[in-house]
Image (cartoon, rainbow, N blue to C red; front, side):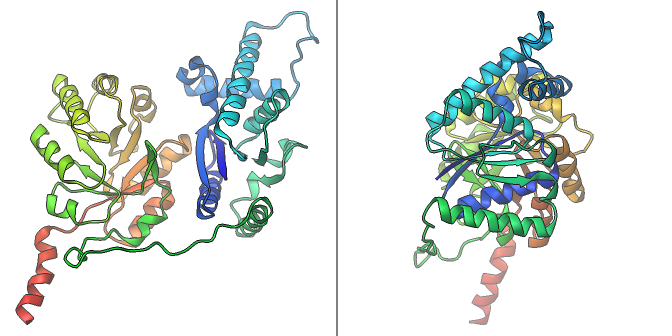
Length: 398
């Protein structure tokens, strides 16, 4: 079954509930996408600031709730006309997207999205569509939805258990359960000894980049470790000026996608743009920029390439809005012991922005990072010397 979650500005509790829902659906063998419903509005809305987005959201809710009727007044304010036009555009785009995507389940993560979806379904009925609405009691849609969950109760343990039971019943009724078997493991006789990521890493939601879900990034430029670990991707960032020869060697040697560091601190300006274009041409899946890079330089890089650009965040004082406005695709939070606190602050304002974060070297610290809101984790592996110490001890004993 194909599922779509329409979200936008969510509370921390609601985002956690949505992630649990997505994990449940994917655990049943379904495919699940999460999108910002505001993206179905015109380009003008996507470019305006957060204050204006709040006003647009309020006006859309009033219009869809029937607060403004075109036949109830002779003249409409220009703002009302503009919002009405945006609603018409968004409804058509949303209906087209759902029909073309063959979605069987749509999750509305907030009341305005639910109202928008109901209007879209009235104007263009969806074939075989079941809707699960997550909304506050006061503004729940009264009809047209198969299952209603209260947003304000999802944070309690009792409500979570009830939600889980409803979802399991929903899954049983709508389709046959998927028979799950353990994943077969294949190892060669010589390469069975590899560096494995901590188990807690797999509790992350992951970030889907061009169809590939990435949960773990090995933070290393050691080719021996990169070739002998089970990370989903490589975070090739190092404390020297970036060089094309290094990125080329890592990309060629790696089994998995590589995100290449292209400067932002000592290396910047036109050289950073050139390094970014070279890394893309070599086959990098993404680029990583250091925290000191200026916003104009960030914009120059994002305008020159067609792959995700990761911007590093080291302090909670970072102006995230400006970074996103200048083209940053993913945030890389690297605040040492303050990393979870920085992530929580970002999540309060940007619940849907993709976040990679340093999670430390223990399952406990990684889980804390994921609970704070990180979608993926960078793991710094032990050095080759440390790994080799164990092997050498066995050699000496024998």
